[in-house]
Length: 374
Image (cartoon, rainbow, N blue to C red; front, side, top):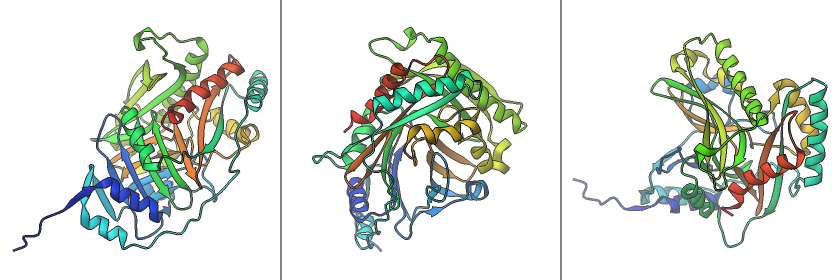
């Protein structure tokens, strides 16, 4: 008879070991959930995954970039160890302490670059000129802000603050040895599948809540147009899959911290995308809420205006249990930490009605989500 007593330790101690040894891991909480879920892959680096071919049978955590290429691939973390909640077995801590550290292969690119207000405002003006020619009707222009990571903080402390401050968002901290540490609190689902029900959300249009109540918010034509572009895009993608039975609700005003957005929700049977799960996701991403419309033209224009690589900002991420259950979110309101440098990201949808200074201010409001936890 085994009379040994199971000794528990805070899961934070396990996360600290992973951070110190550069072991690949992710800790996340779903929106409106307090539960921490920690997945650790101590046996190997997270693999590059072909989403179109392999996602339907995958079980783990997906971390995918804005635009996939050989430099910024999609990673799939297959856990060797899963911890649910705020405590874990001390045996798990001992196991990780016995593991070798992972070498740091950081994929560096333009470290230290920060978008200036002058650059951003000039870019908005040029984009509006292109819109007037009829080539595009929307383009999402993002920016990066870089700063030193605070000496009196740690990535885990930042995650704890994010977790408590933004309970309605998808909150996460992930370490990929090739890419650094990413943290975020994103309000925008890409696709969720639970209980055989698939849900997609069109989220676009932004304003600061200030002292108003959510039911008092009014929207200008510019934001309504911006949201409608994304909604039409998602509805067309659903119909192209031959899905005719779906529900559509919205647009409604959705609150995310001190910002509000316009939201429309679609839902349909998960069985309808079972055989083409990965392909369906890639047909949607990137949506016009993070790229523009038409998408192909916008994706060609964005690099010339942004002067930096988005990497995994505005990509998508989340836990996947084959096609049966998935919680995939667009990677917004996020930061990247590498070599004690923090990169913060934000973007705004530029349309014919955009006012350049207002778009700059909108990105400032969005940056505030992560700046407030630093």
